[in-house]
Image (cartoon, rainbow, N blue to C red; front, side, top):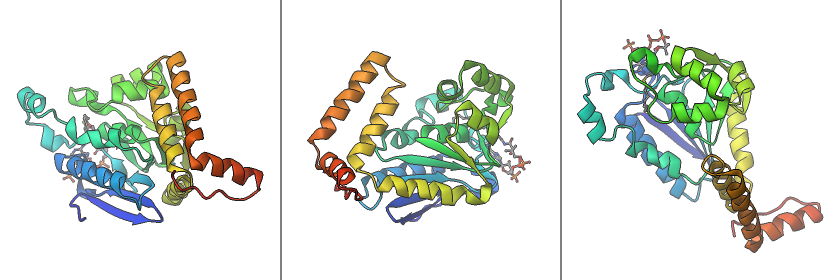
Amino acid sequence: MAYETLIVEIEDYVALIRLNRPDALNALNAKLLDELGDALAAADANDKVRCIVLTGSEKAFAAGADIKEMSEKSFVDVFTSDLFGANTEPMLRCRKPIIAAVAGYALGGGCELAMMCDFIIAADTAKFGQPEINLGVVAGIGGTQRLTRFVGKAKSMDMHLTGRFMDAAEAERSGLVSRVVPAAKLLPEAMAAARKITEKSALATMAVKEAVNRSYETTLREGLLFERRLFHALFATEDQKEGMSAFLEKRQPQFRDR
Ligand code: CO8
């Protein structure tokens, strides 16, 4: 399917989704978020996709919500339309792993979008920030909640209150990103990670997503029980038998998602 604000390519069971509004540094307008929701739902439903990589351009992953589009809206407009509510849902509902590959600016809604992915690989050029304070607003799709869980209260408060940017090295040190690579290696690194994930049992990758995400929602005791029950449940799958037999027979497993 052709999109106005995205470029989507599927190869080797990886869907690469590029945000593509170069004139606005990939600012997130309603069209882009609607299309992204559609593309993610389509990738989630597509048997030829086992992992998703979301990226932007060299200069910007996304410089935030589209300020031009938002500036004249009233409270009634944004409240009644539930601005950025429904069209960010497919990201949360997607059961396949999503890797954010971030180069350049990931600001405001751009930083929040990256944090909604399962993990972030950053180029050494990446700059993260929640500068909404400079516009007289606050983050709107999870920045105050997710950034605080990722980097802790002190740094999150610093970022949200001053609007300063965090470079890639600080983001890695702080736990916001999983790895930092030279800009030229960003996509190869993200695609290699995605391809590695495509080789696993989809049942186990779904279980990983559910269990890790549950850790943000529940107590340690409940989370541990949830994890153990998933672990137990996977013993009902052919993939568990295959994975363990392959290890013992010193060969690569052939998972069939059963
Ligand atoms: N919205 C609309 N247009 C933008 C945005 C944006 N967020 N960011 C950049 N642009 C446009 C600029 O207006 C400019 O367009 P034009 O050439 O027509 O004037 C073009 O992109 C290039 O930008 P600059 O000339 O400013 O490029 P610089 O390299 O000088 O600066 C910066 C790059 C530092 C990234 C700068 O553009 C900037 O500060 N941008 C705004 C960053 C920001 O404040 N982001 C937060 C937005 S609010 C937000 O995200 C709220 C989230 C709540 C919910 C989110 C749901 C998705």
